[in-house]
Image (cartoon, rainbow, N blue to C red):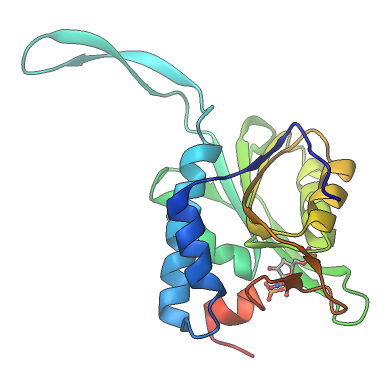
Length: 213
Ligand code: PRP
Ligand code: URA
């Protein structure tokens, strides 16, 4: 039974739904898969960044001078969880080209399904930035919980997590561990299988983005 969390937004947009259906198809090849992940990330980013602060600046139009809003400050960090989260970065950078990009390397142990850390490099000053963590798959939630823990340990505070497909188990584990973050999900799936893969899901996101097996 899926519990509703105040800070979780399940995006309900026909364009996102359509593109996720294309992603799920096992006949979708690497090239198209990558493009779809990028496009979905851009559409999700549009929603996830809706509360970015703006400030009024003076601009002169061909008609007259006016005060008009622009994004305030340049303090955004995108942090993909390697590898699969990398596929979402270009879509968000298309919206916010001046964002800095950090990386967190995690790999799920195939037997325990728990994440193993292998890399962490974050832009400074991380405590002053809005941080958008990307990972297409939120399965058990172990990787997401650990990534957010590492970001907080470096001082990160304002954290948004974007996941294209999530299992109820993953949402619950992430939001119980880090109730202060904002989570954006493209589609909520049914459950995990015995190998901790999301059902119906899309298979292994990293392998499908990078063409590995
Ligand atoms: C996948 C996915 C997430 C994680 C989700 O990565 O991209 O990071 O699994 O599973 P969880 O919620 O149960 O932790 P994986 O560890 O397969 O690494 P990869 O991206 O390098 O393929
Ligand atoms: N990681 C994936 O790439 N897919 C899943 O379904 C679960 C974890």
